Length: 287
Ligand SMILES: [Fe+2]
Image 1 (cartoon, rainbow, N blue to C red):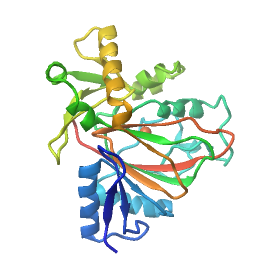
Image 2 (cartoon, helix red, strand yellow):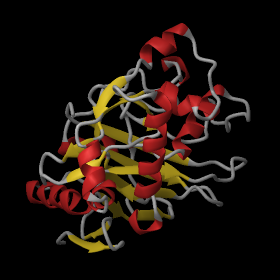
Image 3 (cartoon, rainbow, N blue to C red):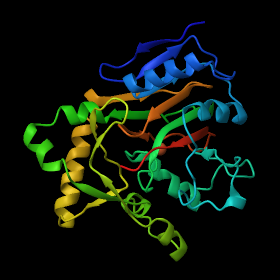
């Protein structure tokens, strides 16, 4: 088998064929996938019936896992999945679906806002890798926005205006924007804002992109309403249909994306039915 990548959107996103990622990869396969990530930013694989162990082994071909501390309100004893696996499902540890007023459920609804994974960490995420184990029957598409194309399409004046801006990112901003405010002192300390540049340069391609996220709630040195209007404007620009690929999940689809130059969000789905999605996340670099 030889790896081939077919474009599935005019500006980014590719579909990979010719590789079984449940098995250990050869070095040239890892290289081809990494090159595919540089070119496409989002890669889709079909028919990959991964176990958690296989997903972890595949993930570690591309870097080191991020330290997951402080990324969620779920306590270690309430986790359903092994360490290193992010649970972006609607299933509790006991196998039942989350209750409507479950704090975990309400917190996870934040994934329906446009974001870049872990932009609220001092060292934000590189790749996220998501395996669909149980697909929800209605809705639940994941949409991706190409932040390189969005940056390129800005006029020169806007590019100059935002070049050196630095934003504050925090889970308190994204969850707060949905009206969730019942955080403990410990959580507030964990979710302390971090600073990220608004314009990033990709380390391997040298291309610039917007680094936006619903976690971004302030810009250093700018009055708050002005900052939020600018962030909303840029987000609206960056998520226009021309820059967005919507992925409709099939069982055992596997999608990996580069958080350094994409945003994503999950659309609403039928929460009376299960959705079992498991994510591994690689650490990126300080911006
Ligand atoms: Fe996410």
